[in-house]
Length: 155
Image 1 (cartoon, rainbow, N blue to C red):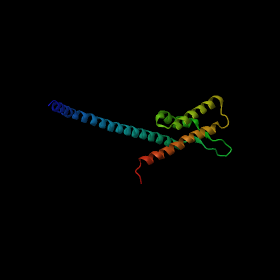
Image 2: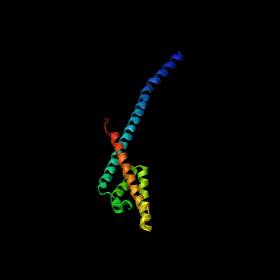
Image 3: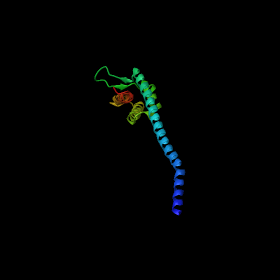
Image 4: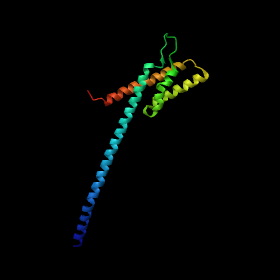
């Protein structure tokens, strides 16, 4: 008889705690689902912000700061004032959106420009400014295409 009472007590305990386990499991599933959804929305929002910044930089490329030489013996150059007042502002407003390589190039451009302002340009400095900015634009084009391919429906 004692065994029967013990089993009945155990089953009563199980019956009483089953809804609690259901609530805990349901809560964990809901939490996991909400977390995934929130992460997905944050990634989507960041992608939209990145595309907006890319669009702005590419729009500003209509007045490109790149100076292409008219003769092959002349050095390529970056028109600092145009870069500083246009693309550089967008890059500095949104550094968290850009790849590390873009930010490194921005800092290198600033360092070279500061050196030129203080000590004058050495041979190759202007070419280096041109190359670093060109790398930024090439990276933006490539990343832009990759993002568009990722969000476009497959053909």
